[in-house]
Amino acid sequence: MDSFYVILGDDDFLVHQKSKELFNKLAENFTDDLSRELIDGRAERVEEVESLVREVKTAGQTLSLFGAGKLIWVNQVNFLNQTKTGSAMGTKEALETLKSFFLGLGDTKLILSACPIHRGNSFVKWLQKNSVYEDVSKKEKEELAFRRTVELTAENLGIRFGRGALEYLAAKIGPHTRLGVEETKKLASFLGDQGGEITDNMIMEMVPDFGEGDFFEASEAFFSGKIQWAMDAIDRHFFHGKDARPLLATLQNRNRLLIQLRVLSEGGELSTQGRLGKEQLESIGRKYAHHFEDFSEKTTLNLFSQNPWFLSRLLSLLDKFSARRLIDLQSDLIRAFQDILIQPKEQHAKIFKHLAIRANTLS
Figure 1 (spheres, rainbow, N blue to C red):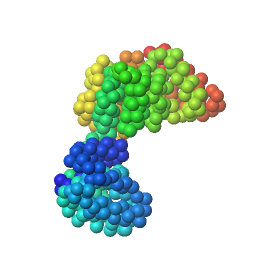
Figure 2: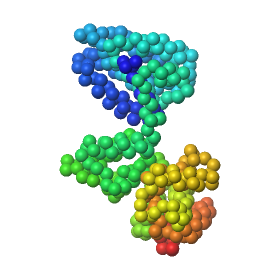
Figure 3: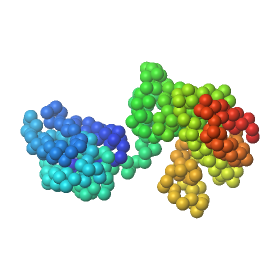
Figure 4: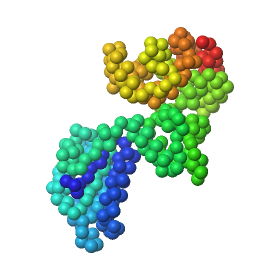
């Protein structure tokens, strides 16, 4: 079994990184180039799966130049799921023929990496029992994987994240590991050979919004207390032709979280001066669990379903807003929604600017 390694998960970047680390480690015992072989495991049709199976068997049965075992990496297998190809009888039959081959590798070491996967797949269940098996995504939650991988990338590049900057990056682009690594490399190039520290301002200026972070700057500026930044950020948002309604929803979602944090703060459950850790959030969540139906669904209606890194950033805003002001702001946001439905698009930026002024001048 120590000859057969399986690494799979839901994040192709993390699966590839883990597999590459293992391949490089095992490659130390296979110094001859001809004793190492990389096989593309992607297949879109049953015929391609059958061809891949033949290629894997041939690679394992072909001796290296010096007659010893080989190191084989079957990379990026993409049909261990419930797609049409993954569910096809021909695919299942082809995979069945690999079982005895995998169990008789001898001196050959074989790595199989796969993403995406369906954990109920019968072949995946067999792999779990008959290999050195690692489910990357199951072992490491998405946010933790993002933090670990991006921090390691920064360390290898001779740079570091300033206080709260890594959380800021995650909030701006979402916990997309591959994108986080690429943006960290870009920031390292900006810092140059002397290295240094990545700050919030650098991330704001140099990292584009992505996915859930698509309205990040406008949201940050809106609640910052800095009127000019809020005005400029709103102008930039509408200059790029972005819609008003998703931004309004983002502001409402953030305000809902601030209301919940404000209530907990006034109740003595947390401090606005500290950081909110995962254990603390879970502990408070258990205390108030009866007020919520489902903690597994991420929603701004449930504070305890949120990322503690992001909530820690919001804590610093609470000193700017009383509970009454946050509740009034939620009503203002509802009225703004009614206004954008009847006002032409040319007036939408003005609606948000009036909102930002009210939010940052009334208490």
